[in-house]
Structures are given as C-alpha cells and as structure tokens.
Length: 284
Image 1 (cartoon, rainbow, N blue to C red):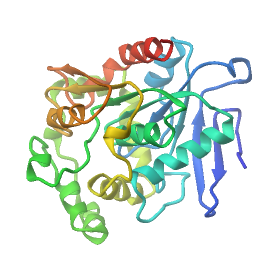
Image 2: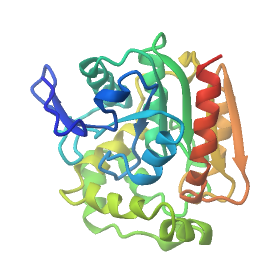
Image 3: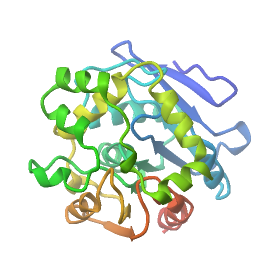
Image 4: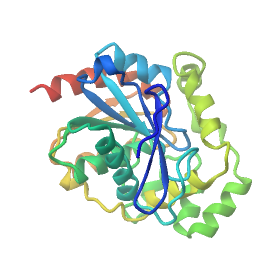
C-alpha cells in the first residue's frame, strides 16, 4: 500500500516485505499531466530537486522518482541487479496508476532508466541517459578516463572489497571540472546537498549500486525499443565519453548529444533541452 504525505513523498511495500520510498510532484489537479520518471545518481536520495522539478513543471510534466534499495527510506536488497531496482520503480508506477511515461536518469541513474524501458516496453515513450554509465564490457578500457575508479574496481572484487573501500574513500577533487564546480555553485547547488543526504545513513546504497553496475544488469541494451537519447560531456572525468559511444553502437534507436566542454555535473544543464526532446518524441 502507498503512504502519501501531501502528494509528495510516499512508500510502498514490496512482496518481499521491503519498503520503497518514492517522490511525486503530481497533484490532484494535474493527474493527467505527462509523467517522466527520474532515476537518481550515486549517491542521492531520489528527491526531485529544484532544477529537475522546475524544468519539468515549465513543460507541464509530472515527475516521479524512487529511492533505490539501500538509500534513505528504501530497504536494502542484497545482490540487487540494475533490473531488480528498476522493477521497484515499475511497482511504484503501478501503485500510482501511471501507465505511460518517459524514463530519464543521470550518471548511475542512466542504467536504471534503460532497464525500465526494457522491462516495460509498451509503457515507455522515450529514454534519456545523461552522463550514464555503460555495462561493464570486461576490459580495462572501461575505466579509462575516470579520475577515480577505485570504487568500481573494488566492486569487481566483490561486496566485502567494495564495502571496505567505502570506509576509507574520499572524494577526488579532480573528478570534477571547473565547469562542474561552477554548476554546483549555481543552478544545481541542490545536487551536492542531496548527495550528502543520500550517503547520510551509510554506504549501503552506493556499495550496491557499484556492485550492480559492474555485474550483468539483467537487461540488454539491444532490447530497448523506445527512442533513446544519450547526453554526454566530452570532458567528463567520472563517466568518460567512451561509455556513451559504446552504448550508442548497441541501442536500436539511439541518439547521442555530445557536449564537448561539459563535465559530469555541468552536462546536467542540458536537462531542459533534453526534456524538450522527450516532449517532442513522446507526441510523435
């Protein structure tokens, strides 16, 4: 059953007893508004922060977002795959009575946006992945260009190794470009605060995310039927542009917007035009 607070935050209980927290910008007077599902990065709370909510509202869009297992308000699911976390999202949408939707994700949210499209092909009108991570293709080149791949490398060695890494890991300042830092001081300032809140209760969500990224996702990129937009910064030092290029070659209806000067955070400034693409694509 869903537990809503002011139509903004709620929870559902999954068949295995886990609690899953979700966020919904919808209100009774805009129940017919087109829905976009936002998949958060690593680590985040899943909250629909102002730059996302404002860009969506300006286009008449309702946003639903779900905290992945292990993040505040959502119980952990040990050994979860990308597909398993995406299944939680679909369960929330079922509870809310949402049938048709577009699915968008940033960074670690990108895989989950793609997975939703595979799991519910008849329901997804469009997919957007901003600075999204690609499936691990089994080669060291997957890490090339990452300023700090320590967490993902540790994940390849298993849960214990990744959890141990989390206990001592510190943010590598070189992961972000000057434009990233400028963006975090400006319109996307809420992103940094939300990242801190996402990690406030421990490392479970982040650890399980990294383990899921480097393991089989449970879905194949070639099975994404909906039009898919990849938005990638050419100077991204967290998820390098090679990941977007690799995915583009495997997506049936993929399109790549390469923004050469942008980094991992500053590429998010493309969200408004990406939402314009979603609106145009979903109405064709």
